[in-house]
Length: 393
Image (tube, rainbow, N blue to C red; front, side, top):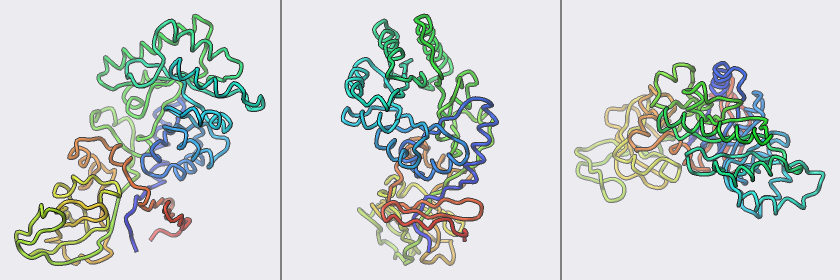
């Protein structure tokens, strides 16, 4: 029987990676698996990408990094954000690469690792430069130049790269950030410091700006087949296939009589006697509560408007005009196909957000289904149930 699931097409993922390599040429790829690989399942995505030749990964925090380290003991894993002091030594011992982004943070980190066993040296770090995004990063000032120089010349440390992040406010402002990045690197060069790798492009700028690709790009959304609607012409450079759909199941079919309400507050009342389907998903599974009365799903290939307020675990759909709906029917809630009647692009526009927020909210209780070469693997992280790859029916 079907259930509320995220379905990930690994053949489409492989296609997108192949397309990305074609577009980038010799530029390296760092796969970004933060937020549970954008809700898709970080461990499973890492295993698949390792098999496709990806060796470099990035996550947001220490705990995400440790999850990936348990999958593979050799892969390069960069932590993009803050690591609490009590986790810094463990991160180093597990050969996780920290981002160093300020003088104070470096001082805190060095105090934690300076007594570490010599057999674990050198310790890998990446240097983050603030070129105008104003989140994390060293600034262009003498004190920060001195600090970065001291890090790069410290015998305990191996600096793997220097990087920054574009704000994507406009091409003019992005180029100004790029120039600031290069100016910082040039100043370090005058001090005799050379960086093994430089990177500033994420998924969008990797497509839009040839000049931003440098030695490698950090990509998440691109691998999963997500495009940026703001750059329709630029995305013609790469043939992306949608990799993901979110689906649920009909749990009840019943009649709502004229004037009767459904769900909390009766924000929807039946204008006539009508058939209604209860659906086995709610906002605790990830979809926004606002979708109630504002979105539609597909049942038997036809649009079924969501009616009433979405509950934590369930919601309702108007199935007038859809014949033969019964318990167990699959419900398509959204997918990554921009031409789909339930496209995540349309959902994001409705909600006033982007695609990444929608998928990053997907709950751990939702079963993940990974399809590949005509087979499917079901995994539920709460129960630990893993079917292994079986014939996809």
